[in-house]
Image (cartoon, rainbow, N blue to C red; front, side, top):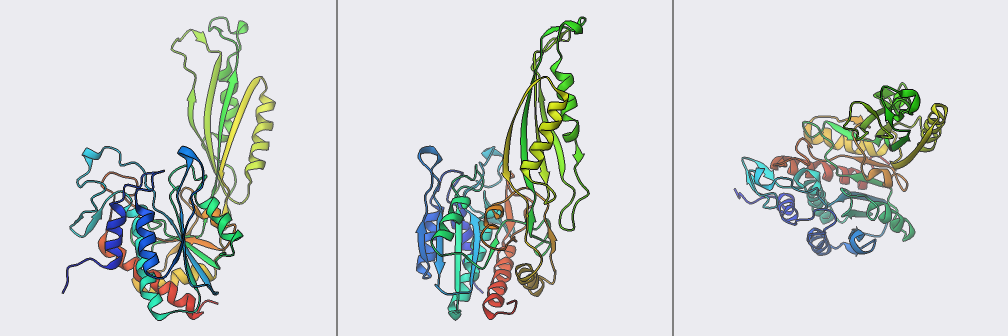
Length: 384
């Protein structure tokens, strides 16, 4: 029996060896383009942005007919942190004791490799339809010139898929645990309150901005904003920092500021939350200003064809039927939902972004088998 790694594991190793820390391409997209072209994919590089904000992306499609299934992912990775703390160098892709180590092993070069491994098996049967990969280099960054721009290009150029799977590491403990079929929205606020500095013993001669700031923050200070929905937990709001910059205990400061974040479900929109909070701030009064950043809107892919495809495939391969979840942070699925039904399913994510990030080698092959089952069922029309 050969000890050589599978096609998917070998590709995962080669991808990890590309130092593609956002916004660097690092050779990862070049590698994928070469491998996919050899399989018969038509590859299109899609750079967006200028100067330091320029991001390289890759769209690859096999076939031209319907039905059309897409796999989305990212080759960019977060920085390695303290490289000296790694047991194995972060870009060496070492396999040790059944584990593949390296930055991006879990998030999410292993998932991309598993999908390519599955595609390699499926296209040998020359299925009637299309398979595409939408791979960005900007998921771990500001996400301004990656998937969001690619989705616009895909739609404008007649490549809209019927379904899309994002290969994020959704499983907390074992393959078959969780499918993400939606995500919450995210709204961040930066509130600044100005007052009048003065002696703390003579408060009537000053205007303490901290007092008003704390009143303004009450609705977002560890609060639940609703009772949840059938698909979402309650929306939550938390203060993340309060800054005054006052080293003196006997001086009322002239300025205080805070930042907070709201993770919200489909009961809310960013615009409605902003309106509600600005009305509250105005009732408190005084000299204040606030800036907002809404970088994600909530979405849900209702249980149906796509979630059934993944669930049935997982159950067939692992014996486990995944739970549906909308928890966690944001992902690029928030952009893809505007063009087709999307769900996320990938490797175990316990070590993503950590020192010694790793995945079980066997899991890459198991995920390959799950993706292959998804593709077989999709092209057989079992869930049509």
